[in-house]
Image (cartoon, rainbow, N blue to C red; front, side):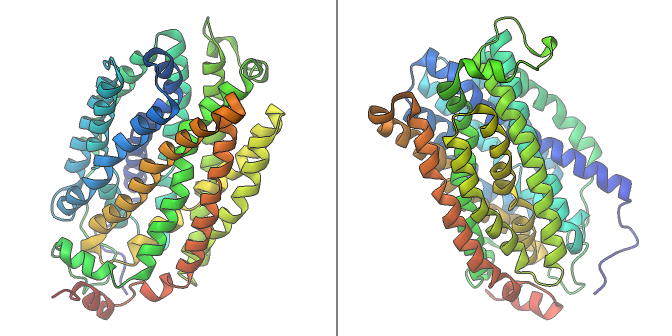
Length: 455
């Protein structure tokens, strides 16, 4: 099979494109996760319950983020993907700035909903672009590198949000990061070229855009798509829930101890009036950044290494990681020693994000090139409706329900109960490891069979 072409992008330009895509993804997660640290002053000013916070941060964002991803991905399988991402980045960044103008729960709910509308066009087209910039044997690492935007954006959002909320207030944090994204959008469009679609796929690949009915006809015959999607969604319930609630957990459970633990910070990083909110931002932001980068990169490396011989490894690697995640989270959450919790939580943070490179690479391998953006959007529909829509809300509702018994410590036990979703994710991905190899597309005849299944 011929994978390379004479007009392949240079390694330097390919790296530039990947860097710019990571930057857009960083804005994506910065804008969605900054509310995790800002929810503390928001809750105090607007008088919201934990359940309301879960609704506002999770369900409001997920409703349109997940559902609009499918029609936008259909456009991405037909039209210029870089334009779609540029428009999406501009919209969600502008709506993030609008969040800073909200005066009550419903105004913030609607603003976050509109952030989700914009971000619906930011991810599936990027997956498709990466598949046309990187050949199959490098996609696991490319998808992992792209996914660096998750810990980088989350960490920057948590730390930057804490700093700005301390120096100014939570409203200015939204406004500043939103305007930064708007300013970056034209830079992205001017530097990233639309690549040849299906560049690294078999010569006989069908390149005409697929209808949604055709994509569904292909996917419904691929059990691996559903087990991968549901497994990722189960892990995302806990992943997104942790991003949203751990800053509040640190403030509630440790409070003044955070300042003592972060006393090593230089003076220029600690503005006047710093309190638990700022220290929680630095504390958890460091965990997310260090643990997340290590886990995502390791997952991508192991996925490509073992996936070269057996495609089922793209599911098996994260399945093993999820099994190992739960006991470390339990130790870290239950520990009364703040530094024990810090170092222990680095491990499950890494393991909990190791699935991104391998699983995303698997999705690109089980569908033809003319369906990748749409299939990715259908995966994101499942992952985000369940993960974002329910994870944050469920942890908040459990925290409210346990408050009568545990008081300020209710969030600790809510998070502890939520770790069981990693075990569900592991079971589904273990099942996927036996299915991915069978569903993988290798030859022209397979492509023809898959793409013509609905005709």
